[in-house]
Image (cartoon, rainbow, N blue to C red; front, side, top):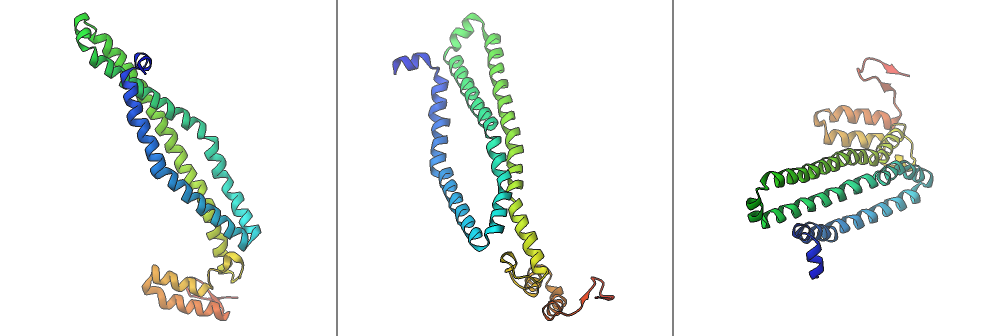
Length: 219
């Protein structure tokens, strides 16, 4: 241990005792639990989709692969810049501790300008690493969320199409078109509920379709 403290700067040791230990504690107390819950939800949803309709479930799983490929492909640069930022941050803390402990020596030999230049170089290097990390995160996270929402959009699109066509497929089992219209009226346009209920009765009874303006019937 004595040899370790002789070779390692004080600031680096303090950084390991604060940032690294805090990161490990945060991972085991919060991140790990969220990851396990997300994995359980994913497995349950996959089993439910494949058991309901294997073809459609396989199609949704295939549409989810771009998000996984994107995340794994860009994992390396994010990890590199995050480690670089932590290393440079530890370097800044080490320099600060050394300069504070050796402040009398710095004043005696007139090294204020020299120490300021070296400390500014270290802080600028840490600042650039932090910017690179934020740039990668600001690009990866929105793209991952966008790619992850593709299966949900496909389910809503295909399911809504089947509902409008009056089909009873696995993804069209949400309800008849009348129920969807009534729910929409309850949630969005209470004043338009009578008109939508009338339209729902026409859909259920197979009546003639009416254009949005209500001017003419469509064969």
